[in-house]
Image 1 (cartoon, rainbow, N blue to C red):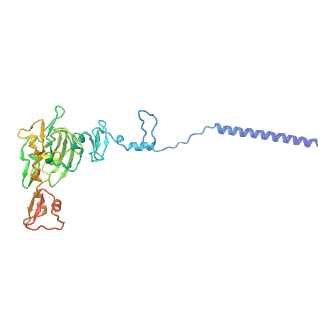
Image 2 (cartoon, rainbow, N blue to C red):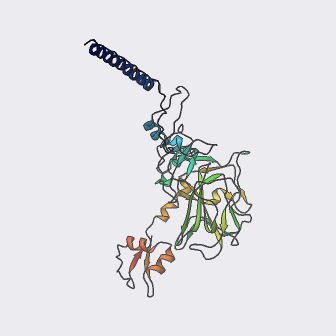
Image 3 (tube, rainbow, N blue to C red):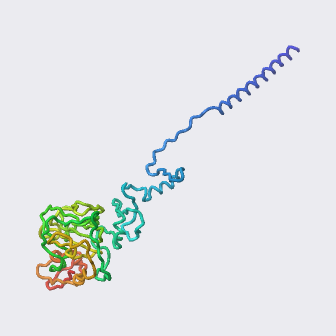
Length: 350
């Protein structure tokens, strides 16, 4: 009996020791889990090429990504000419203030210095398609304006061609008004900007000016160079007086190589001889005075002109004769595409 009791006691002691050992083992396992250093999980993301973090001069904390994406779409984050600051507006530039940003975007590709919209009040309108987009009746000018043509030594002027030979003057030239001065040249001769400026229009008018360029100048004038064989500069290019704009030719409605040269103020054509002394190849002065008297001829140009249809006439032939498109003839005379001309019919052409 004593032996049985001794065996039970030994078994009890062993069981107690086993429980104590197991408890110690579990305690060490938990401690190892606590002390074990786990490698951090790495999430590899593609670089964000649109949203990037910018820091202002006060805070060093990065802006939230939602704000960053909005910022990168704003004007100050667009590609910049390092020499100038940029701002973005639509082609309607009438809302530009003198103290706004230095450059204006007139299309997705073209950035223009703000001064070309603020130098003169009517420059607030920028149109790279229409020669006269200003909707101003120059006959109603109440004031006399004196324009400073250039300010030496920072600016200059240049004749449009090296050699000046007038072939047709400003004025009425049957059957239409001639808005410029024609200067003879050889095809390929260099045509130059007369003042510092910026190219506003580069266009082709097959039934009129042919290949032509319009330059807006700092002095308030705009000049047109027509019938070019090649246009060298693009819209938005700034030019200096004497810089080559293109090469002379005979494109468009032209009977031979010549430069059709116009000088315009607020969209209406001035007689170039009011500004230039072509016979001496100089300016008439450093300033030019402009009033409604310079545009009295506009009353003549706005008179209605009719053509009496003769045998053999076609709309195409009449359009070439009067310098208007076939579509304009149809519109002025309320003609459909199937309308026929009749001998003796009176057709409005202007």
